[in-house]
Every structure is written in structure tokens, then in C-alpha cells.
Length: 271
Image (cartoon, rainbow, N blue to C red):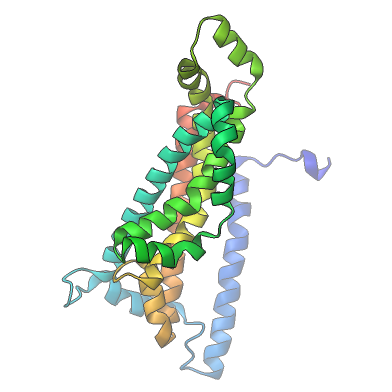
């Protein structure tokens, strides 16, 4: 049997997926052990016990200045910013994407503007946002929205515009108005695509969040990483990066499960 025709059952696929991760961990442990054998004071590749000791203070010790546990305060602050930015971007993408996809006059008028905004590097706008909106939470959330919303809008608009024309014609034959077509025909079919667009936007959203926190913040995962980098504190940076990766994976899995539960027809259920 050709490899292209091989289907992997769920349990073996989990094992196969875990193998590369385990190999990376083993490679790291091997290289770290070698470096510490040559230099016990090495900070570039900390051993697991060093990372555990460094993180224990951040996980369980209350900061005397803020009265908060640093790790959890950073996590909550970053998730609040990320959630707010994703929420605003998703609602904007759904509304604007439907209008652009269904209504040709709107697409002809505002399509070029959305395209122009989408190709601007969001990081280049960061100084402008901080000058215009200040150094507070608004600028950080705005960077996430500006960074991912235009791309999500283009994706939803393109998907809706490619819906079978027969559906639009049948709806009009039954007397549906433009708004009824948007709500009854386009919206239900756009929802699975919207969740997919959110999944694809998670990575960029984290990038913009970390960038904003690194430049102007006093709490957050990105802030902490860039704060301790000056001390070469890799025993803190690596666990923080791993925690961000874990949070992103959990969000992605939640969106996948949500999409399959709410829209099984979009995933081939029953076919």
C-alpha cells in the first residue's frame, strides 16, 4: 500500500505525534548536560532542576511590591488582552466579511481598503498606536485587532463570495432580501470558517501581544520574558515560552472541538 493511502488510527497517531516532541526534549537534555559538564555555571541551556527552582518563586511566592503571584498575574493579564483582541477582531471579521462577501457594491468600495490595511506590517504601527492611544491596555489590544482582523476579514469575505450562486438565486426566488440572504444563507455557512480563521490567527495574535507587552507593560508573559532576558535568565524564559505554547495549543484544541460539536456538517459528519 502506498503511503499516500495509509490512514493512521487515533491512538497510534497520538503516539507518532508525541515522538518528535520527545526527541526534541531528549536532544535538549543531552546538549544541556554536555554544556553543564563543561561549565556548571552555564545559563544558556539550564537543566530541568534549575528551571524548576527558578519557576518555584514565580509560581508560589507573592511579590512584595504588587501583592500578586507573578506567574499567574502575568498569565491573567496576557490572556485578558489576547481574549479582548481576538473577540473584537472576530466580531469585526464576521460583520465586515459578510458584507464584503455578499454585497458587490460594498466589496468594490471597501475591498481595496481592507487589502491595503492587511498588507501593512502591524508592528510598524506600534509606535503610532502608543502615541495616539497611550501606553495603556487600549494600544496593546488595538495592535492585536489591527494585526489579525484585516486578514480574517479577507478570508471570510473570500469564502462567502465563493458560496454557490444557486443558493443566492434560490433565496431570492423565495423572496429573500439582501439582509435575509446574509443572515439565513451566508452567516450559517461562514461560522465554521470563522472558527478556522480564529485558529489561524492565534499565532499572529500571540506575536503582537508579546511585542506590545515587551515594549510598554508592567505585567504579562511577554513583559516578563523581555525583563529577565537582560540577566540571561533562560531558566525563566524557556518555561514561559513553553507555557505560551501550551496555552496556544489548548486554545486551538478548544476551537477544533467547538467547531466539530457546533458544525459537524462542515467536517464531513454523516458523509
